[in-house]
Image 1 (cartoon, rainbow, N blue to C red):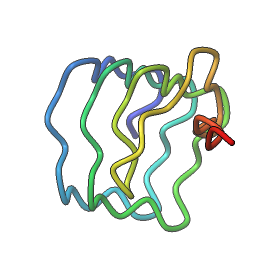
Image 2 (cartoon, rainbow, N blue to C red):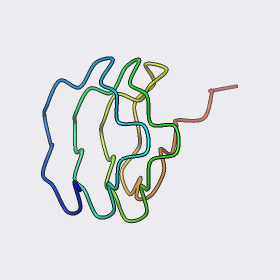
Image 3 (cartoon, rainbow, N blue to C red):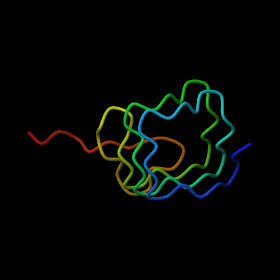
Length: 73
C-alpha cells in the first residue's frame, strides 16, 4: 500500500505502479513519464505540476487525475 505516500519531486520515469493503492498520494512536480498506472487507485492523489505519463505537465489542482493544459488557439 502506498496510501498517502509523499512522492513529490521524485523521478518515477517508467515506474510500474499498476494496480497500486495510491489514494491520497502526493506527486507534486514528480516525473511519471512512461509510468504504468493501469488499474492504480489514484483518488485524492495530487499530481499538480507533475510530468504526466505522456510528457505533458499537470496543471494546479490536478487531484485524482491530471488536468492538462489546453492547446492555445
